[in-house]
Image 1 (spheres, rainbow, N blue to C red):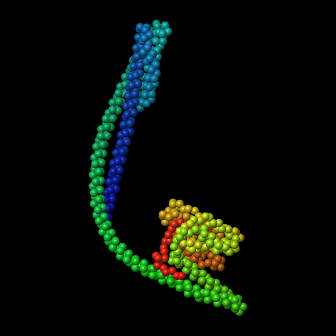
Image 2: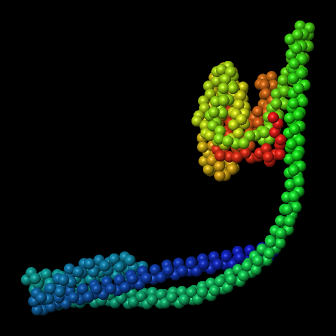
Length: 502
């Protein structure tokens, strides 16, 4: 056990190390990729700045060259390149301004804006002289041309240009150095990761070998334990078989006793009731009021005793005397019960609604008993001066609902509901009413032995189903029966070892 715990701890530690290494490598890789992307962006921006200012510088020089050639020679052919360059210069200036905005260095941004301003001033001076010459004002144009203004503008432009170019080349070198450093760090990290991964692979291999050896050892020990358990199971099975045979014999004796006891108890009860009835009819006048009360109590007690014996016998025979299951149409069963209760239904003027009910594998006589008990109770526990309304409905049960109720899997389930509008009961008694001899009302209010619902639950359980009760005082009662359409009895006469009596 300690070895297993130690191996498990080692496995967990190794897994944690693997996760840490993978996470560290992933984090470093992501960080490296982010730095690489940032450096690429900076290099791209630097190259764009250099290219754009060089293009602007060349454009200024070409424009000035065309202006000089035209002013000195008065030849229009010098203006061809001049005009072509001016047509492009606005786009070039826009590109420089855009690079100034993208630049991450405030000083460079100021210089780029200054360069653009000087370029515009220089170009304006060149354009002005050319336009004056074109308009015939050559002397004014030459006066501006020979002045130092153009030279000063170009000197300032060139000074800013070289400052920007030098700074950008310096930044470019820094970025390249950073890339080389990043590459070196990446190579180092790759070597460390390779070594770490190799060590982890070796550790995993060693741990796997240890686990394999432990697994083989535990498997051998488990096989040895299984052999011991098999021998004990065989011994226990033999003991249980003896107990089962003894239980079967005991069940037969109990069933025989129940049959004989019920028969022998019913016979003296019938005599008590017979002689009591004779006294009541033939000698009632000879008895005073107190004697007649005693006689009535005796007859009522004998009748209750007879009912109790019959109900107890029926309760005990739910499983021992149950018949084999066969296809049973529940609508036919309910119609048969309604025929038996016809007089009670007419007396109570009850309205009973029955939905289309399914055909299920069941013991028809026992399902008859279930509906008879439930409908009898619904017709018994009614509210005075209120129309009696009983409704029997059916609906399919979905798989999630069946699982939530812990119903046996692999069967098709449906729910039967018997709803009435009777006196109802407190929900706290919902489980109590299914126990034998449990009554919620006195004998003087409602007749009965308190066995009916216990019989219902036992029959439903024999059909692998479950029954639940829901109610509120004065709001009627609802009984939900979850039943399988294709179930089999949970026990049988052969399993119980009971001998049937005719």
